Image (cartoon, rainbow, N blue to C red):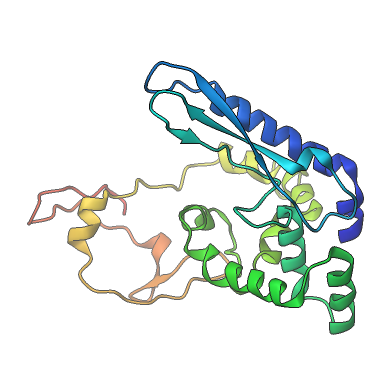
Length: 245
């Protein structure tokens, strides 16, 4: 399946179109100063593809002619400064922990990836990626929570065909699809307190274990989603905490 994805020209054509649309969006942004906008074509030598693609050997970057400010659009074909395709890094890292030694060796030979490089990718997913601002801001949106030790495989499973089919299908116990039921039902969300209040309210650090069933944690023997406290005011800075938190 991994080789079928990498051999499909439609996959890389879609990734290239996404990069071109992102580059057009960056180019149309309003820059701070007037003057010419220079376009730089950065050469790339991607590895890991099962057949050569000349369109993937370049990447666009923009530089203002007056203030010399540079903007390089984000890319879905490349993962940072890595020379391998981003899809190769994701798929190889996801399959590394699920394949036996023989099949893993054949996969690495087919992709042209050294085993030491694969181990370095796995270490990046388990250490550096979980500390990035992107993952810190997005991980709370997955219920039940993703298993960090199984990244990126656990992340790919949430976007697989079974998960999409479950979210798009109507269930007998629900009057519609799960997203429609969530939107039409009563809101159980509460306003998040300000960062100033949180800095004044929390004085100690306690480690809590999150439940995989509903994503909640226990506070004083009760689920955090059931804790209801009246509005409070911080004595030091007089910042108010929203009701219901």
